[in-house]
Picture (cartoon, rainbow, N blue to C red):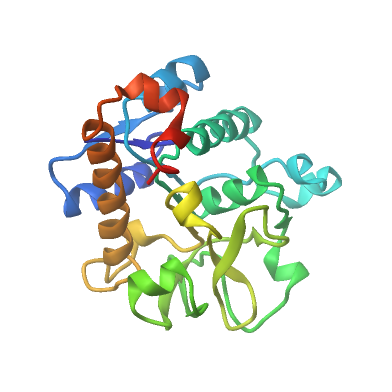
Length: 262
């Protein structure tokens, strides 16, 4: 079972994503679509075709011009527009093929922008609060989150509140088309988004926290259950591909013929 990371190298922190998934399924093969900083979309799409799910990983700020706030670029950290465009195209393909999608931190922001949403450029200045969302000298911050009733995330976790780690200064503002808010911090900052019609569009959940590096990752459902459910959806997708008379290329060309995807 091959699972893609939109970017899985470039600094030691990216290894956490593969380690996290392999901890829950050692048989999975993790594919870094941007290895060695290569953003060749043609190559990456060919590799994504062989995968049964994709994780959009954390990293640098998105170019604010992508969501109508180009004038605020100086309030952002380093921008990598080549990566932005690369991942936006990967997300488009993943949606076209009904691949299971998981977004983490920047990945959640990218998914929201890809679907027409906007971002808060700088949470501390635009939404001042007693809660710290950014990373500190001691590492990730922590705060409570509340899960929205009736969401896929809530049904997965079987919890409606808990503590997560936090290391971001940007966040979802206007929610993109086809998405709904799944979790918020006590100050109202969006902490998770998900598909508003998973039975039609396939599995898509994106969280602002970093489940791959939570200090209690093996115990917290906000890490463990998220990995287990994503891997379950990937296995289900793989079974769907191999359990029909259609071959993979036929599925990629016409996923709607498979009862609306996974």
